[in-house]
Length: 372
Image (cartoon, rainbow, N blue to C red; front, side, top):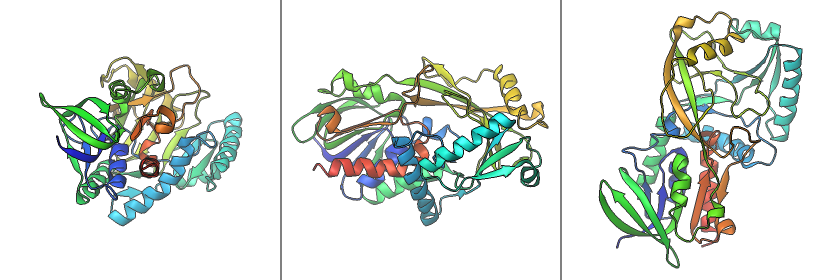
């Protein structure tokens, strides 16, 4: 039976970031994914935004890793020539009440060590974004966009340079703890085989609870309920009317940030995502959504032309927060939580997972290797 140092289940951006970090000290790192290639699910179906870390509760893992990860991500992009743009974000208010909310958001951001937000008046907005309708706004200059596919390619290349491997079309079946390590059973296109590893990392995103349920010795009460939440994106044809990302004021107790305007590296304007909880992994795009999007966008972009809105894609987020729940943080379980030595489970790694990925990778590596 072949033996490796690390098996990571899931090749999304977080799994790849963990692999790149682990491969610096571990000779054999295997990344397993049931799909043909890396990053085919949540990591390739999002806004590609580098978040500033404004909204998350103080001292939460989302706030901590977003702040740390943002700095690391910009440095990584510069060092490895990953396409990115420190484009900036405007959080826009439409009335006095919402303007007051901006003050609260700025104060909260300071608690998360995001100290670069600036209040922008309506007159100033007219100069920098003449197509934008708003009474005032907060400018977040450290918010940006990234070519997420190029970033994931770079993480995989780094892992492979250090001797690691990506193994696609391979489904995790189960893992059995055996003293210092695990026997992991895998299904590679119908062929079942077993492999030993010292460390096992469950970074399976949408399938993280399914993987956890098949790790022998892991108690059920350590496996949280996961909710699948689909979000849809519309593209907008023609030249973008905006040079910044545009976000509305988040609704109270919302599970998302509202339908916002983002630009990708190529300059394509997109609107989304909305939030729709689903019971099956289905990327369908209901055509009836166009009216809802149009009305939401109209609030801050009155000159929108409805015929220029076109369905682009949908993505599904692995949320711990249900539709009626309050905030739920990332859940990264080490053996201090579940008592299975050498195992780390990651649950609910949604936004800001892309921004936080390098910080999460560092945390996971430090957590495993400090107990070695």
